[in-house]
Length: 161
Image 1 (cartoon, rainbow, N blue to C red):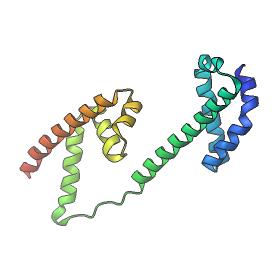
Image 2 (image 1 turned 90 degrees about the vertical axis):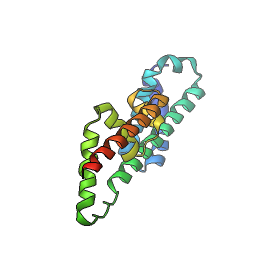
Image 3 (image 1 turned 45 degrees about the vertical axis):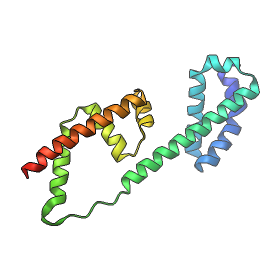
Image 4 (image 1 turned 45 degrees about the horizontal axis):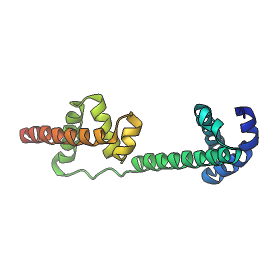
């Protein structure tokens, strides 16, 4: 079955499911399109499946994409909605932020990205590994080493205060 006939057969039910998840027709259309993009990339796999199995595969793909987007949206909303910490007396909070920024700048771009994804976005090592195309065990060990290095640097800078 070619992709065009697959789209004609399954687009309406997939759109209805996506609309249930998103409650937004534009977002639902994007989910369906992304599911068919994945179907194109998995062409050989889909060719081996029966028609009901293809339908199930596409529906699961739409579901997983909807869940992934909802999680990403929750993470970004949580990040945006974080309340700023109250300023401590004598500018200690400002000093802490300046020190933290200075210490983070000493990291490589990749290490800084790992720390930000974990501590600012709340991503797990598995999610970071997937996003950066790295094994999650590598992310976990690098994160441990990075934080150890940051603690050591922060203590050095804090002693100068």
